[in-house]
Image (cartoon, rainbow, N blue to C red):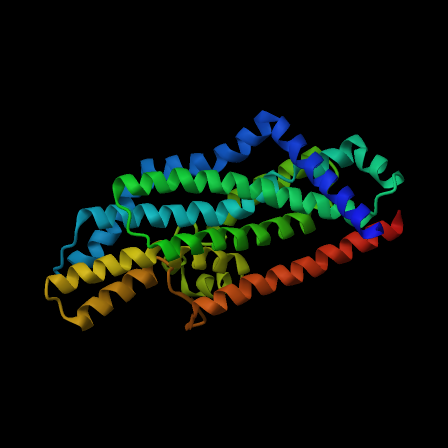
Length: 313
């Protein structure tokens, strides 16, 4: 009976936190507009750069492929970048309810009520996860409409896995935000951390520029960061269908298999579908293992912080 009561309290708090967030239309709009601005900037300024890079990979081998596949592939690469980085940056920005409750002392009102401190903390985490997931699904749908217009070659299985990748990325983002923002109690602190994460995370995860374009030493350092693998799994499932389309087109043109393999692997290496750590290629399963393993460590850290803070109350 007690567990059922605590569960109802959790559901009520999650509902309250989520409603508070969506009630502030400006806050929700800002969370949504950030990845959409990235999308517009990519499409407007960087799209042609990546299209030329894909075309160069084939022209260097005196090969030609369907322009529609190249356009779609560039768009898919951009979408993988936007969603992987937004899974973290939006999670930091959408965790405002927890900070606002600290500032307004609403959290103190909760603590004097018959609600466990762990229930309060868990409600913030679940609400943040749901809000971030909602924002990213909206962005994904907009992006997929765009891909359908310029060239859609993503199989159903990979489309499903993209959603799984989004969930994994958001889990990492919300746990990281929960741990970091547990120590923040002012609006200025939240703004500073959100700005820092928004400006830096895309670069260190390889979302804005492929990690393969960095110096070897920096590549090895970035390969130690779990966010890199959140980007890597997203890259794979967005680009797999396009790599297969390229392969089929080249086979239809009677290109030798060795040449096809060399070109496709070169593209995957150049655009971070293949990731390497100190010269060793990281399998896709290992990418999931590193990302989810980091999530497990962050969960332990988050639970420890919650327990310690509740003991001090």
